[in-house]
Amino acid sequence: MIYFLSLLALTLNPFVWKENFRKKSFLWIQAARLVSAIAIIFILSYFVLIDQTGQALISYGSLIWGIFLIMEIAYRRVKLTRYAILLGIVLILFFCYLRFIYPITVTKAKYDFAAERTTVVAKEKVSMDEQHIPVVPEKYARYKSEKVLGELAHVSYYELGHTSLQKIDNHLYWVTPIEYSGFFKWMKSHKVPGYVKMNAEDENADATLVKSEMKFVPSAYFNENLKRHVRSAHAQPILFHPSFEPDEEGRPFYVVAFGYYEKLRQIPDIKGVFVVNPKNGDIKQYTMKNLPAFIDQAIPSKVAEQWNEWYGENVHGFWNKIFSQEDIKQPTEWSHSDEVNGVFDHKLALNWFTDFTRPKSGSGAMVGYSMLDTRTGKMVYYSGANGSLNGKSAMNVAEKTFKQNKYKAGIPNLYLIYGQETWVVPLMDTNDVLRQLMLIHAKNENVYSAETDKKTLFDNYKYSIATKLMSDNAVPTDQALLKKADGKVTHVFKYQDDQSHQIAVQFMIQGNRKIFTVSSRQNPYTVFMNEGDEVSIQYVDTAETVSSVKSMSFKKEK
Image (tube, rainbow, N blue to C red; front, top):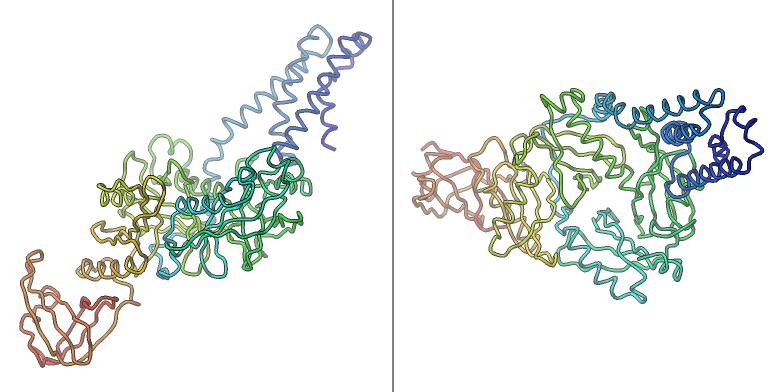
């Protein structure tokens, strides 16, 4: 029983007891110290929910016991008391060392911890399926969810919880659990009606209420509080912030990551999760190696933020971080959001994404970005994005594009789209209503698409890549977009392109309804093209009638 530790709050010097045990005031003081210690332990265990481990005892106990020992100064004239006071001073100094100095000494160890989990590659190789790229921003999803919440009976009892991006039945949704709005509302209800979900892939979708009563939730009180319920069954591990995750059938669960500290509570290491059924409180424990398939988020966002910060800033230790800053890169900081954002890759696996910039105020370019697998904790750092727009610059480009409308950009995410690293940026009005969607090329902000619907957005971006990056061999188009065609030229039209100062040639091939465009810069012989010529071309296939030629050759030399 941890409450036996409260006995350490009593005066332990037998000579003090020998002189004062008959005095009521002395006994009252001892009783007050004991009650105070019991109250402190109760607060730390029941409200703070600290882990009951040796490291926690050292961390918290050094300060608390040190204070009680220094209180022995009232009996300083008694034999051995000065040693108790000295021990109390040492314990408090030790606490200060652990809090303020020891973290400096393990700066490099934190980097090593993160680096062991990190693989460095130049660039992602597989493009994201545009169908599964979320275009609905979180703020807009909450705006829609608030409308659904307003339709509930006793709506004043409830409020929206934390909104997160989840994969359900191979589609991406914003899911928001309903929480209690206060203590008295919990007393009257003792259950919440369910959660709200909204399709993140469809900008025209509406939020819907999924009815599923829940009792054990984060906003509940006493033993119905989610983390307190888990702590009552598992006293030792660290409990991290819970995530709300419906399974593939839409049944709600809360996932509470657990782990242990390394280096005297400086480095949190995730070991597994507790999966809680919020309806009946049933708790199941899983290690990181045998997670249920429906769980997307085993690594909490705050832990991912720490690991990214350590990897970027602690590379050569504490003093380098403060002074020379050699090889340092800093994760982008957002004023009203987490430093990491949830991004699903081409396998529909959730990753915590963040971009890194130079340690320089106002830097608009990133030096790379990371993707941390939320199920395994493994991180991939992409170094080939050096010099690309960072997230804040992408937001600035989007907002300046619609400056007259005064739209505000939501938090952008980076995806590999058609072989190009591309920022997906939503734009909203002052009421958080989604108004525009933008795709912005990370290497060239002049290559972008801005539309109100997803299909046209991606079609136009595909065409923008094809027409504006044709001469850029450094960023080749995704091979999936390249098609081949052979045949006889049936129509030819030539004109002078005033912008490029090149001859532009548009032509058609027998049996193909597309109009192909090529410039004299790509192939000088095109200026001599005539009807009847046999050509072989490689072109960028878009949904548009006009397609740009990537390369071409004549079957008979001109």
